[in-house]
Every structure is written in C-alpha cells, then in structure tokens.
Length: 257
Image (cartoon, rainbow, N blue to C red; front, side, top):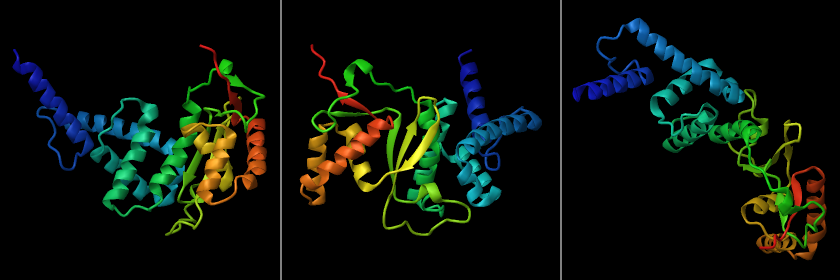
C-alpha cells in the first residue's frame, strides 16, 4: 500500500513536466495523448490569457511569434512561488528579470516595461489603507511628517516605459530617467502622471524613510549640493499640490499612548 501514493506522485510530476515541456519530456505511462493535450492547452491558454491582459504592450512589441515563444519559455522554465492568478504578473516580471541577467537577447527594457504595465493592476488590487485617525489632513507639511497615500506610487525607470511602442524601441536609455506617479482615485480609476526630479525625490522618501518635510528637503539639498533655502519654497508648493490631488493625505498625528 505505501507504494501507491508515491506512484501517484511520480505520475503527477511526469504530467507536470510534460505539460511544461512536451517536446522534451516523456508523458506519464498509460495516459491517452489526446487527454494530455487537453491539459496542456488548458494551462497554456490560461497563462497566456492572464499575461496578455496584463502586458498588452509587450505582446505587441515583436509580434505573435516572439510573444508565444516567451509564454512557452515562461511555462517551461519558471517555478512560480504563488498559486494566485492575480500574482502571475509579478512572477512574469521576475522571470523577465532573470532572463535579462542571463543574456537571452530580449529587448533590454523588457523587465521595466513589464513592471510598468503590471503596476496599474497592482495598485488597482491594493487593499492597503491608512488609519484616518492617525492623519491630520490640514497639518503643516514642512513642520510635520507628510503621509503618502497608499494608492500613490512614485515610480522610477531607466527606460521611457510610458512611450515604448512597436514603432519606438530604443537601443539605449535616455540620459534622464522616467519618473512617474501612479495614483488610484476615489472612484478606483488609475492614472499616471510625470514627475520632475524634485517631485520624485520628495515623494519616494515619504514612503520609504518618512520624516518632516523640512528634514526631507534638508537631506535632499545636501545630496544635490544645494542650499536648503533654495528648495524650501518649491518643495512646500509641490507637497501642497500633491495634497490637493490626494497623493499626500496630510501629516502624521502623534497618537498618545
């Protein structure tokens, strides 16, 4: 009796290996080829459908032959760490990054483009929230600690990901990075906006290393080799504009213990 579970396991592994790579794997013994092909087509079509909906620009870049080969390679080579369909896109990004490191000849901007395309779904599905009781919506953004909305993501890319198209695929990145703010509105619509270097340099640390607005400006001025006084007014205006559009929620309240 103990051999039966192990036999089943070996059959399941053989089936999985064959589904991933039918050209180079041996199918499980005793299974009808027609039924095997049904499993293969079901899984491949499901994965292809998910990725096609999340990465439409990548699909169009080099034509269907390139896209289909990429899907087949992903199924054959990548070992996903999640069973959840909404997270397959992140697995695809990880796979493209690994391919780039191994020199597979893909367009060099592909991992960043994949992240840019996925981010819209990522923020749409995000359920991260801030406790309103911990925020003063009218707080002083320079003297207090600004709070970035969980539905506002500052993003930086080496490549011009928002401008890549089949007819525009540069061989080298531009001199300046692409700085974006991705934001989900109250009606759940998602939009991108371009950021200037000051905007990104202020918003990104609010999430990763929060401090008072003034301290953020002082750190930024030191990093840029400028006098802090030269940045205070434009930084204050920028933070106020970001609060107006809902990207900055206010300042962090000190909650008594």
